[in-house]
Image (cartoon, rainbow, N blue to C red; front, side, top):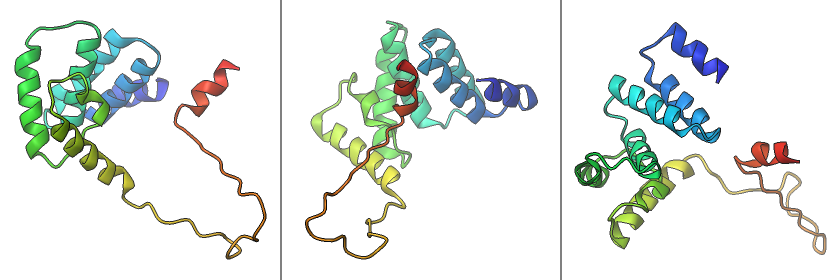
Length: 148
């Protein structure tokens, strides 16, 4: 958060810094402040569709219903026509059909799968009979580690 605060102090019109500050505040449970950061980012760059959808979702969490139906209708129209992917989780609280959810999920999956490539063992094929070791690293790993 210190780095984002410094970035904002240096370039107050940098929308991405406000988005990242909002995400950091959100992860700390400071939802009201996160919402303000997302709103500031959208004031600076209203075309950030993914941020608009995330803000809509966060507003629902705090029961801020002001204009929520009109906002949702506009978001659903934009998500259907815009190429920018939106995280599928944020649409689950909207009145979306299964087909809309599938379309949004596919668009998002395509955006994160870019650059993914098949694994090849560094020494060729692994020896038969050896145990395969698999590790999973999630974005929440660092947060979980702090709990222990």
